Image 1 (cartoon, rainbow, N blue to C red):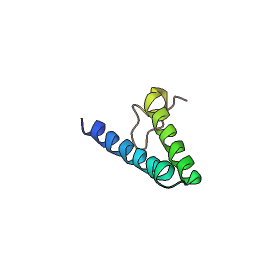
Image 2 (tube, rainbow, N blue to C red; image 1 turned 90 degrees about the vertical axis):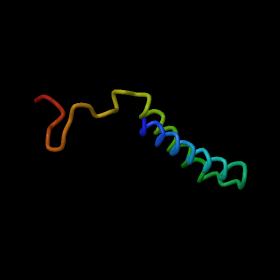
Image 3 (cartoon, one colour; image 1 turned 60 degrees about the horizontal axis):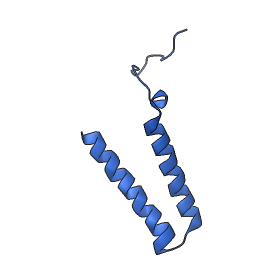
Image 4 (cartoon, rainbow, N blue to C red; image 1 turned 60 degrees about the vertical axis):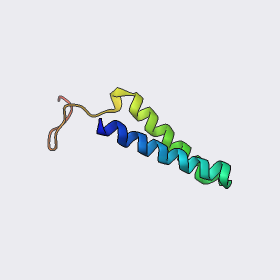
Amino acid sequence: MTRIIENLVLYGLLLYFLYESTIKEWDPWNAFVVVFVLFVAVVTTLMPSLHASKTSPGEYPYDD
């Protein structure tokens, strides 16, 4: 449950930065960076194959 709240806070913060760099004061480079970070965050969240599962520090995650 805390992960969901943390993600909502982080996404809200990124959306606020997007609002500031597009509507409040036009800054296309900052807007591009924020949109790119949002895109990577959403893709990483929605694609379960990008999540590391069943690994621990010092353990090689692939079978040889």
